Length: 196
Length: 64
Image (cartoon, rainbow over all chains, first blue to last red; front, side, top):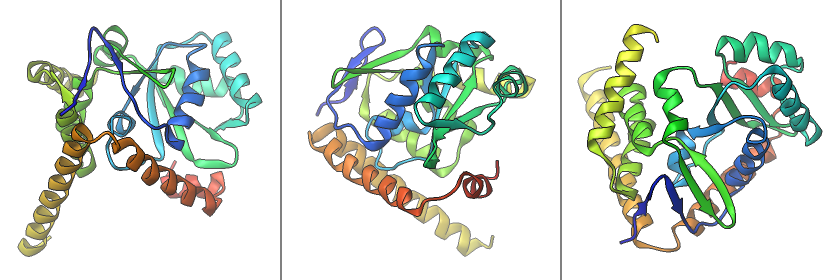
């Protein structure tokens, strides 16, 4: 039995790259030039083997300044992607700055999207202080801490799909900390209650 | 939702969870898990790509 084992925030795995992985590598590859990012949500479970796909890949970023953001949008556009709004200022000031997510997709395939969210809550910013960097086939992706994803899916989102995602992660990883899951649970619930 | 419908939902959820656990066990015990996963995901995306939805249609479906 070979479970995924994270050592000091790093993990190397062997996997076949799916069309979904290619989309993530391409889009996140652009984002990473302009902002620190961490992958969250369903794609975390899918990347580590869950037998399902998704149409939305979620990431947190640290808020870039407008100049960097504008360059990032420019690079996306030049590589055949589009956002839900064309105007860069509106994307930045009406969405990102107001903590609303922005979506980007390949022009000919709007069904598959990267959803970019600014991390502003304490629990969200922790994705950057405890990231998991995964190397595979000469490529790298950065994920939020696995325990945070289990806690969020199991105790906050709680849909059937989310409970299944959480269970999958719990089973395929070695050394998952129950204590850490409980700490994240408390933190998420506290933030939810107090609207932080 | 009446009692029998609720029970049926619980049974389905439990069955689905059993499958999830069985598959997770497969992932940690078989090297070909990612080959099988790739076949599944790539075919799903290929089918979705064939539908050729416009961004307006996607917006309607997703409600945003």
